[in-house]
Image 1 (cartoon, rainbow, N blue to C red):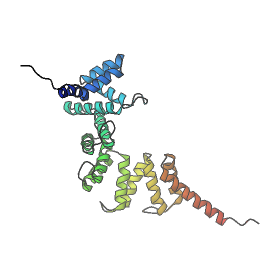
Image 2 (cartoon, one colour):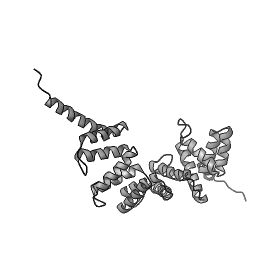
Image 3 (spheres, rainbow, N blue to C red):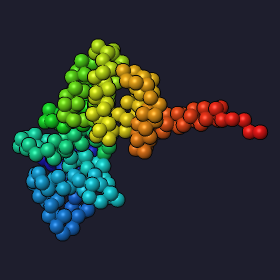
Length: 264
């Protein structure tokens, strides 16, 4: 009795081979590298975490900005992130890899956008102490992307990010206290948070604190102080601050013109 080989089966076999992520990544890696880098590639394929870290950085453009391959960068970031979890690797660089894996999923870089998977990796990084991941979780819980919306979870992660030293979180928490919707309004605490962030050269904090001085909220009203703060934020390329600075400048020029003696 003869064995038949359906054409559809024969056509299907190579598709399985080439669509396999490991096979594709291995082939690409061996194609892209020579010499020492090729040896690193072989080690990465054998699950050497340090080698995978170098390969993932290479494809993400961190070694040579002119060489970027997002699908490969995503593949090696995710593979290393999974390996780091499995081996319980505690070095912060692996926490950063988990965060970056979340970014790939959140932004759809090299992989189909998936907010649930982005949330998963952001949370893994946040639980290991990454302040940026904590801040991203606060935004995710607020917007309800990939997870059920929860303002309380958002606030909790925002506070944790502040404790971890995240400047953007300090500015956002200051806004939360200033608005008084999720928590009792507390402009004194808002200003305290902003001043701390200003000392760390946060452009957003300079702009926000400038508005407190511009309108005299919990501080003595002062256009001079506001303008100075707006100027610092403007030099950091914050467009809103530039506009606020020039608005004050125009007002001052107009007052000068009105108070000047008439020309005879």
